[in-house]
Length: 93
Image: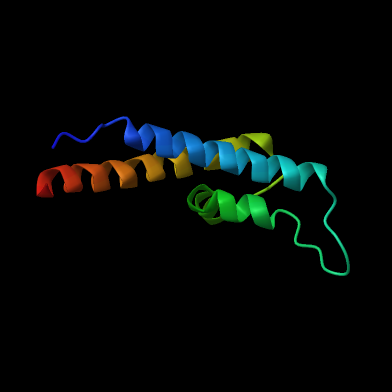
């Protein structure tokens, strides 16, 4: 069976759309109540890239460039992961 190789691109694109929604919501709606976890959603949504920036210095969730690069790194990792799963499934079946 020949699995479509555009599947990883769709998975990465969907991840980007969901992550952009999370980032936009976090930046436009004020954090609430007695506890404030500013940047937590952005950090978790872009975890691999955010960890890279954290290792190089400090991840600034308000920096558009850092968030964009983190999003690209995470989307590339998701693309690679889904690509490996699709290729593995194509090899097995």
